[in-house]
Image (cartoon, rainbow, N blue to C red; front, side, top):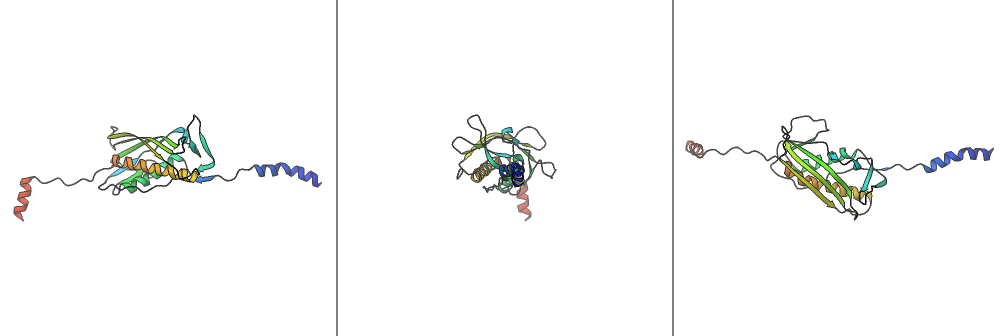
Amino acid sequence: MATRRALLLAPFAALAGCASPDPILYTLAAVPGQALPGGSGTIELRRIGLADYLDRPTVVRSSDDYRLKLATGDRWGAPLGDMIERTLEEDLTQRLPGTTIYTESGAISTNPDRILEINLQRFDADAGGAVVLAAQAAVRPGDSHNALATRALRFTVAPRSAGTADFVAALSAALGQLADAVADMVRIPETTPAALPQSAASAVRRRR
């Protein structure tokens, strides 16, 4: 009887032994940068155009040598595109004090002064282990499809170690560099009162 019970329980024990452990979840984080003075207005960050190969739950470590290398057991804690938008929103808010930054996917709905559009073409490590961020950025007025500025951008950041945590930290640092670059593109200078004509200025002085 004992032998029969052991045989019946053996498949369940094997399944339990093969069960994979819970994955480790990671998230991107904003990093501080230089604040640009004199900003104003509202800016809408459109949904990030994310390369399809990156749009997956598992962390993509590299796309070199014609193949994807995934971090087995390491997953994103939320959709990657959503995390990138949230992180860039925080990065830009810190870099553009006085300017209201919000995302297209958020709850706020208003007519922005400017719209920022970003295509993220690469966001992983090269053959040497350095994180590469390649993107296209365009800025346009909120009421027009004509671009005020467009740029192709590329940044590299060396992780402190080969671990996934340091890899994700390097991804966050690369997003910070992207925010530094687009902040100056999208910044709305603070308007100043027009100078009085010379004759009017003289009249004001005489009245005083």
